Image (cartoon, rainbow, N blue to C red; front, side, top):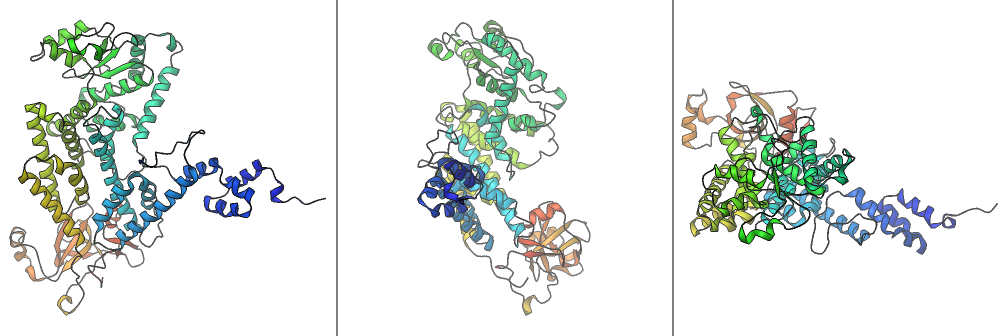
Length: 589
């Protein structure tokens, strides 16, 4: 019986063999013959390997986001090669960032600006670095910091595109708020939001066997009823102030409580309606926002803009409260009861489709108002909430501010507020990574030479500090009395909090005001004892006298482990200390 060789097999079977190989192994295997080489270049193979290796792609002028459709024109092998090269470049920059404190911020900015989402898969992998990696804590920490910056950068980019066009879709514009505060979590993208709404639209249509026979008004009512039956619109008065209800993805993705405020209720209704062919949009109605619904045929509202009239067939709904259809007369009667809304122009503006930009602005105002007038919801006390709202407000009001004196004043107030916040946090050594956002987006917004010069000066100071190496503090005769080392964890003698040593001075180097206010001279050993820079479990940075430190021989908490990556490589379980990653500053610890 004659033996069968590999090349005796049909192309289909050899193709299946390639499917069980990695891309690099397949490329080597393909060098065996011209026939193998031809099969190894099959687009479906490289499409599969691209899909297996990477989830995130940045759309670029010279390379659109790959289309996984079977009839895609994407050059898959070239796309794979490009991503491999990009990943190697990313790792070089990222490893340099880990190796020294110098130019860390600059390298973070390079990753975000040069790679954007092309770096996200690699960042996610670093975020889940194996426990036995030599610098596991540093890799996880810094990849998380860059991921958070990348998410904020994408959110601000999304809003910035909307200044001169009614783009992107409503769910993406509102979803940018969620993206801004998402942190380093890798499981949320705007695509997740689109998929949730797609699934909802499919569920609505599948639940009604007579769906195709309904007219546009009956379909709108059916959508609202379905959302209400599944608790996807509205909320109780007792929970109205919950901050989570102001973030559309946090509403849709919550496993049990999907309550929402009017803005999100109407947005969800309109996004589902759009997917089902119903022409529905949020309108500018004051107070509780409504949805305006047009007939699929006949004149559209935009066709009658010149004479401020509403075409026949247009109706309204308030999905937050009920499933009722409201007529034009009903809506005008409500407006007649409100001051400033009794002219044809003002009423037309309230009853017609709102620009997406105005809706983002409205949501930002809702968030700020909730923070000012309501007690913070548990888990939503972070200043990032107000920070993201201010970003939405300044970007959305930039274009329209010159057209309205009132909006111009508010825009300037919001702009001053976000700059003041940034400067304050910079003084505390926080939010330095956001220098990129302020340099790229806020600086051009500022009017007046003085305001621009002030922010430019702060940004320049940040860059200079980042570029300069920290002073080296060796162990020598001058520092021989410093008892503790970088990496040790301790408990404060008096206040009981736990932290880790990230630096030290042979004597107190704080300013005289701090020394007096902290009553350092009242300590038994005063200011001449060693003082230690500390990172605490609550994320605060402190300066502690040696006599107030009791070194612990126990494992750090999960929160301290998470924060420790900023200064340390890993936790040494045997010696109960963190391994320093700031040797350039404290070489002997």
